[in-house]
Image 1 (cartoon, rainbow, N blue to C red):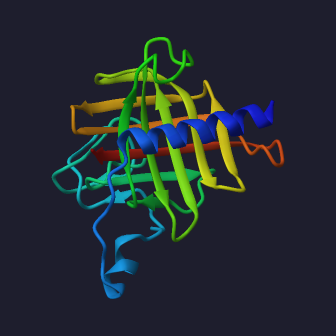
Image 2 (image 1 turned 90 degrees about the vertical axis):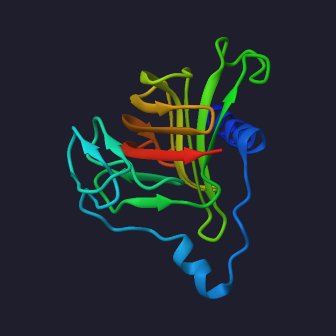
Length: 197
């Protein structure tokens, strides 16, 4: 069963990348390290807008409607596993909509994928839900980690989509009982996303 999860996660990551991937501009070496960074945080977002969940949000540009990880700047996915340090991904962060045909029947009504790949750190993230508007949805598939280790969950948790347009999707998510296939241990993950195509 664990191999099925990993194959489904890999398929969806690849489909999401092919369906909605947009390359970042080439950066000079002195700016490259600043573009991608792991943030150790405390729930504070100084660039966002309204916060109705937890954490602190003191700026203008994001919304938090549930978990304590406020929505970050455009082009970011932020997540936290088991209350450990927050991980911020900005490299190849994008979203796409997979039709029922493209999913080969896996999602009869189609699905939205939100993903990011950070090649320099070997990190990848993918979130899939069967919706194409604002609202709350069951998380169909969630995966975070590296190509050799990480966590995967099928039909776990909830995503709250606060913005859904043809070029931007924003929201928060949380899930429990997300499994590390190598150990069988269950984990909790929460986070937010603000990605454009």
